[in-house]
Image 1 (cartoon, rainbow over the protein chains, first blue to last red):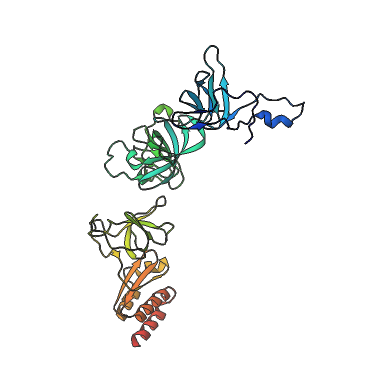
Image 2 (cartoon, rainbow over the protein chains, first blue to last red):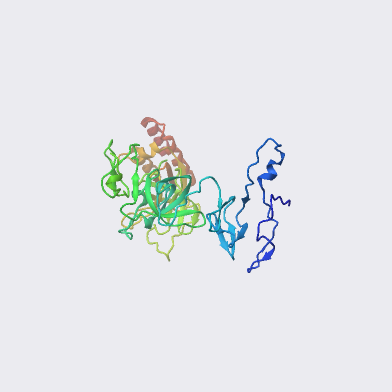
Length: 241
Length: 167
């Protein structure tokens, strides 16, 4: 493997054995823009060398920087947890904050306890699968997947038979809360077991947007048929008429 | 065929996984049938259902958003003729319209067929009929008659029945 570096090797990257037997060598290739733009010619202005890093790469010592977003600390060193550009913000006095950024804006991830807006993609007798579209009031660029289990649909009468078909339908917009980051299939576990959570926008079988009547029914203004949903009690100041 | 709640259908067991059977009913999705949905079935006393068996049951859940669920038991827990269909016999398909005609309250075709031979017959609303008579030849004759009833007029039918009754 060819090693390409613009400057001195990063401090703290000498060979060493970490306590648990992991051996990190310096042979991680660091690709810099200097190596790419070497053929540009004298007229081109060279951008300052941008350092890219990969997850698990050891960046520096804790004495030389403090960890920011996209990094984690282990055994007194700072490691990168994302694949992206390394950014050092030099502050006056305090240690520089070292962070790794993938794109210009950092992706907002749903946290445990955050209210998310999602759209139901498919239903099953045991759970409903949803696409998470908004976290709070910011839209997500890539939608995440979530699951609302049958037990988490209602707060009261959980033991009574809750029919997912009478609470959600595919295509409904639902306000839910994250209870867990989920299993290996990266499905967030969500709940609607509160009065303010549940279906906000739903379309009837005839395709018209329905109006909520109670906490468990919505009515179509065109055909006047009632359908069962688990309706969210939205605060009056947020309703637009 | 589009599954409708409450319809009685004939299904073919295609898979057995854990607690449920997957039953092909001729719709877009196989229906699921729990092993507890038979008369007298408990966790210890499992019903004797194998892959490839014919099942006569009704739908409890059938809508356009979820996979259909069927049971072989009515709301009181009695079988009412539902369950695994016995050995022998012949399963064949007809159009959905013919099934509804045959199951109408005053159906002459059924009365005439009953006078011909002693037989057992099961109609599924998904277009499937299971017939069993004493001999294989009689079974095949009955199957052919029922399939042909789709296109015959009443007179043609009476002719055929009288010819069969003579021979």
